[in-house]
Image (cartoon, rainbow, N blue to C red; front, side):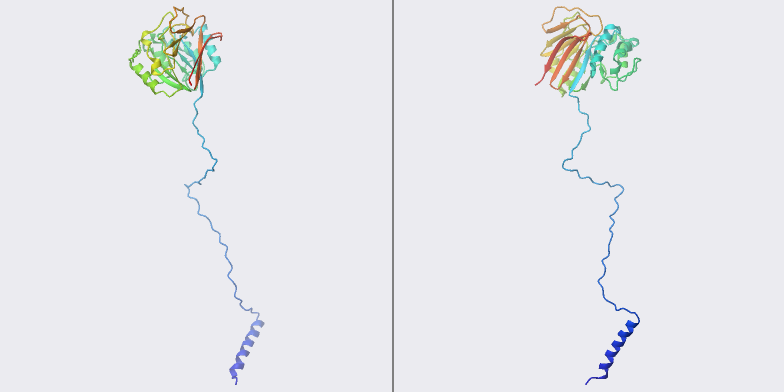
Length: 330
């Protein structure tokens, strides 16, 4: 038998539903939570940090070092500092070659190496090779490309001081070395006034021997004023006969005798080149070492050196080729 409660409870539920609808109420329907979009801001880089670049497999490293030239062209002039027409002609010949540098075999400033004559004897014709240049004949070079050796006329003024003041050279400036391209050059002062000596047992000779032994250049050239061997008026110079070839030299350049001569001594070429402007000399009888001689006119040498070959040429001031000699290495 049903009780009164069985009839009352459904009636209450029905009345509640009807009342809720009439009041505009909506039933609550459970829903799934909506996904929230989140913006993630990466941390700011440290002020001192820099992005790391990962090189690709094809990236290359470029060196900023300046490569050494494979060839050097230089002129050789000796006994030239006269400020005369002969020097002017020889200088014009050299300027026309557009060489990398000039080396001299002494007597740069006639007659006595004085300060009053040095700029006219040298700078007037070669100022564009000299740095620093403080003379009056134009602009100097951006780097020094003029490398003289001392001659007896340069020493006629006490201490060769005008010469030492005029140039800015390596080492003690009397004897020194430098490298240009494949060539290592050694300037020797073999005048009797040289304080470090001039014979093969001197301090200067020991410096040269050590330098030649340690050289890694393709070629080693020694240049000076007094010629160890010459068939000219002055002749050979006994104190200058050092064992250059045995020490490692490949060629030797000298002056003092006003002429051009090529000799072969101990298997290497020796050149006497003193025909740059001073009055030309006669020859005596040729030496056993003599291979070629010329004294018909003034002139200069042009030398072209690569890693494997070195070509020595002598031209008269008119531009005529008078002698040519090649040395090579395997």
